[in-house]
Length: 410
Ligand code: PEP
Ligand code: MN
Image (cartoon, rainbow, N blue to C red; front, top):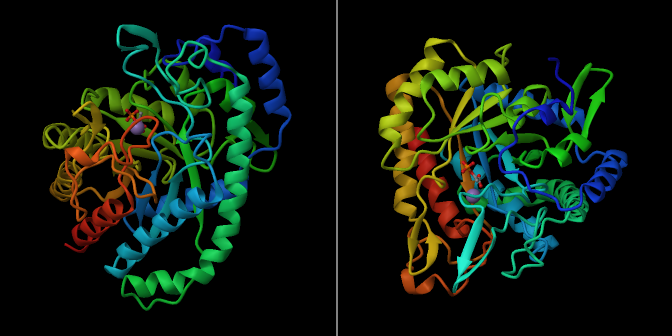
């Protein structure tokens, strides 16, 4: 069976919404297919080239942003603070002597969430789970939780505005960089920065509608973002998400959780990167601080043994979620522990520790605990704003960047 932008429809698709009105979905898909693409092939190729330098051990990837972008919390400040945070984290790594950093935001499309449970019960009332603003609403009432395809149009519009803002800030950041560099004690001259966008490619109706054929490269590209990734719950070898991602030319991320076996990983790499092209595939481990030392070595060993060009990155968030006082939270010490273990295992296996994948925000939230801000369980309700998973706040994210800078120097 040959690949096409719609060939995923012949495969089982996990975690996709059940739309009550398929005709309304069809109308939305037609509108998205006629809309201008959000990203350009040339920019995606630029990211591919930068990631190829990560693959060869000459650069480090910082990927980060919200767990779930929000329609309600959107504004230019939000985009600007995320942008500046990524830039500052990059400056911390460069000030630590690490030359090349690739900045990749979880933004402009990160609106859909896989969930571990299809429903949620509060005070004896059971409703379908919230699945991200592109699918349904976060409010705990029946009407909000019905999947509405028109939300895909709102997500697309917000993504477009976000990308326009990022372009404006990229130009302005060129001017701001001397100040950021001075803050972190670096005297490097400012140079243009490229900030790329990424999101989980969960909603394949949306992704298909924004996938376009490029005559010059003779390839299909997902023009919903620069990089897209496959989540840990949707990486079935014969499933719809792997099928879709296998045929597009963008860089692809693959979340690798604790139950991924080495053979299964190699088969996934065969599907997603059969030509073994540097910069095509980013393997994003997310095991938890307690499991990374058990699970990661054999996975790294097989990719090295088979000569795979795929980048290894670490997501120290999703394996370290815990519940405290009724809130989902994460401890900075667990996050740091998983990052440190990642560097240790990579050194032992002779693999380049290529990047980090974080849930974080430039805002002053109280969702994760620890780091150089003193916070305890009682502080969690104060500014707990995330729609889904707990994010590092600005200070905590900079703490993690400082730890990474130290690990990269060793
Ligand atoms: C996420 O990145 O928000 C996510 C759901 O991750 P994972 O697929 O690794 O659980
Ligand atoms: Mn998350």
